[in-house]
Length: 216
Image (cartoon, rainbow, N blue to C red; front, side, top):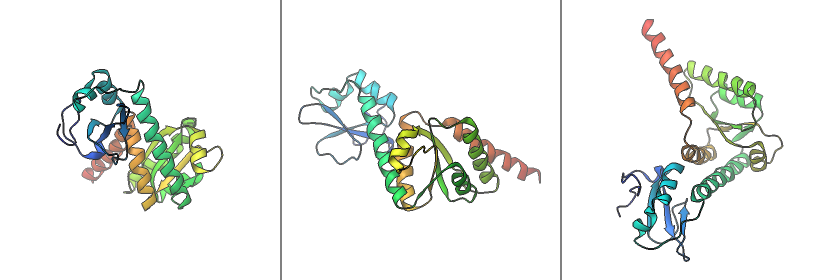
């Protein structure tokens, strides 16, 4: 079993693109999100589809060359671990002053280029998301950074993590603590299938700007 080779696709990848698993003392397969648990490990592409495929096809037993027990909802277990990791780091970033809350402050952080990423609660209104989206597009048009937005958590989850009430919109700022949040948010987003529409929208804005420059 090659190091950092997905047991489903057999493709090698960087550690951040995979999730490591080990076998616990009770012969159960254990997700090693932090990649620091002892013992022989195997790797699976870091999205729910591949992890559930590995479980369904008994690939963990083949990889470990042993009889192992796979948790019934291994995909959900990994989702919960990634979610808690992201929310925990988000709380630390808030204490470090690397998070702003509220639609007006989020929009301001986007327009002045301070925002690294935006978080919308699942309950966020279409109008609120649209206004911040307009600010994100305007920032790209003006040559600023492409600031992605994610809708991964509920209002209750964001409020609990950030020590506020009714947290609907938040911006993570481009600071060291913010970079740590970004890494975990991106991992969770990728695990849940990614945000292709968001990426396509920003790519379209960049293409429009390139076309306008070519015509000048």
